[in-house]
Amino acid sequence: MIVEIDTNSGFCFGVVTAIHKAEEELDKSDKLHCLGAIVHNSMEVRRLEEKGLVTIDRDMFDHLHGQKILFRAHGEPPSTYIQAKKNNLTIIDATCPVVLNLQKRIRKAYLASDSQQTQIVIYGKKAHAEVNGLVGQTDGNAIVIEGVEDLSKLDYSKNICLFSQTTKSIEGFNKIVAEIQKRMDSDKTFVFNDTICRQVANRIPKIINFVARHDLILFVSGRESSNGKVLFDECKKVNSNIYMISDLDEVDYTIFEGVKSVGICGATSTPKWLMEELKQKIEQNVIP
Ligand code: SF4
Image (tube, rainbow, N blue to C red; front, top):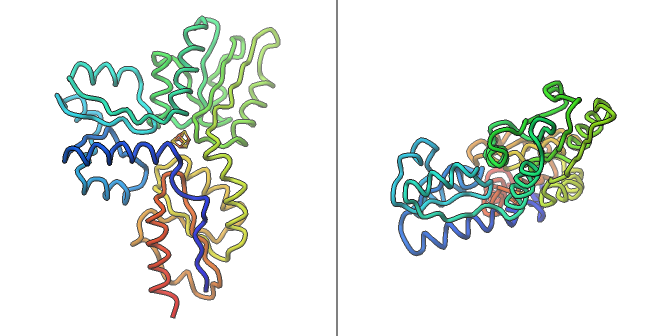
């Protein structure tokens, strides 16, 4: 049996930068707070927590004073920066530049439009950290749609300006665009901005190629990861013998019976070291 790791899977540059910033700070001091999990991968979070990273939730953040706080790659709404200033926190801002640029574009579109006439719409996952940061650019006025089923929320007698969360699928975005175009009143404008990060989208053809070559696929990803879900669904379309693994202990070794080739791949939040450990574990437990 051969076990191969997909060379194109693993951290994107946004996550690499965030983790690098955290490690840099932890080299200087033994404690750094992070608002939310730094990456949607519990094992990588654990590795950094052992070095002194302290993951806190929104409630703990509101009560934190005079400490250093890291804002992860997903970005934050303006209200978080205001609260941090009030609490005299030192911000280590690891917002991914791609997300930062999207936040600026949404803010600009919001300020340039009249909210009575134009709806700012975000195609994304409700309450996802990145989406909260994007909605914050519109003072909470943007409408979030998760799919075609949410399109009845929009008023087609008003203009629409559409953006996408960075990790959504291009296919899903195109469907939304086509459906809005059908419903719009002819005298209203519909502007759509494909703001999907190509770090995720460009991986799809490569990962599809990879999973098609193997009998069994182990997809390593945190279950909360948006891009993990997008990539997993794409992989499943070409190879249904696929399992999502978020922790090495989840591997059921009976699935390897009769399998000649195993492919290991993952999301932009999946550390390379975790895929390598999984490969080693399979080789120790399955290969005679
Ligand atoms: S997927 Fe793209 S937008 Fe998201 S953190 Fe990575 S590089 Fe940034």
